[in-house]
Image 1 (spheres, rainbow, N blue to C red):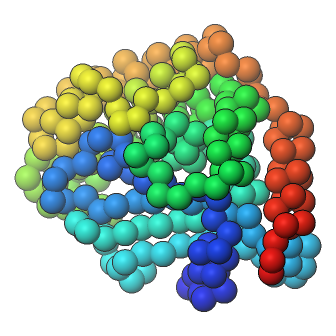
Image 2: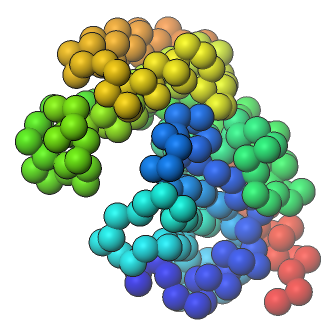
Length: 260
């Protein structure tokens, strides 16, 4: 497996500085008895995997084998190297940015360095760049919902058979819009999602709204995001120099105190 193997697992197990729940369980939009559990972690890989020939970007563990869809009770875990996580965060990746706002109840493990990252990271990571990513992900979910009305090339044909469209794509589409707007307006993301959005998304996932209604809500959020990308109080771009200096200090300090 590209991102598996015992050596990668050992790095993830020994050197993780932060690990939390992500996905619908974190957002508060899970449907009881149907959703798997998604977790994300960050680790400081050993020096040999940075300055040597070997490379560690991420470790992936899934309860189900590759190509098999996860179900209720399954775990999907991705542990990123701190360097890769930082690159994704600076680019505004929506899932990665959630780490900065996770409530304590959803944190699986955290070290002092992990706490430093959560405390200091928003100051040099958050920017209007994230708005472009939230907008792009929203549109991607919308396009996947609209372009496969008959269940072709979708993982959830049963939803299309029951509701006429993939309601999980619809829920993700609206969630991304809501969270992107909140981030650009206030510099934070409320987790789990606040009402009335949380109940609305659950209702959409259960088929309580038509595809046209979901698309209409998403269109309004898309327009707000487009406006905020231009006039949000967040800086236009992240502070890459500060991020770089933070990374260098984090790695050198960790390696200096490592026992192996």
